[in-house]
Length: 140
Image 1 (cartoon, rainbow, N blue to C red):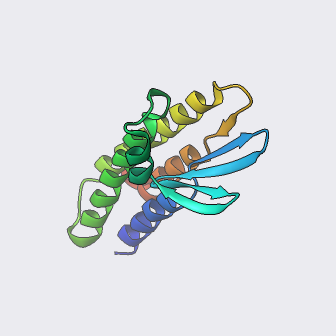
Image 2 (cartoon, rainbow, N blue to C red):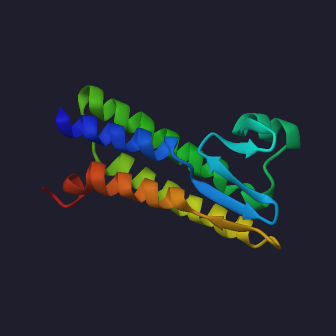
Image 3 (cartoon, rainbow, N blue to C red):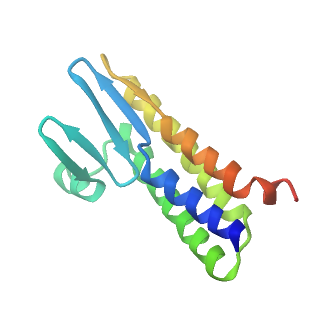
């Protein structure tokens, strides 16, 4: 039970922390799994609100909703694992792939002039794989 609790906590924390820190000439903003935070003025824009505002996800940002869906699948699998047990490879694989997509999102954003996007979320997601599921993946 303690192991599944640790797994669930690692997955929740990986989704709650910022995924990409986007820096530009005038400042920076963090992108989370489900939205991004503005500091001037202080506000939060949820991913569905952003998509509704722009009509569709721009190609350079398509990795963001994909990573969020992969993360949501991993979170659902972690909840099932906590409740009744589950194959640890599934949430671990989804978290790993979400981390890859976060890296692709940061790379895509960084291709714009004067923007540097740091994929800190890839580290959180991969750390969640290691901390939560490393023992299962190593066969321990």
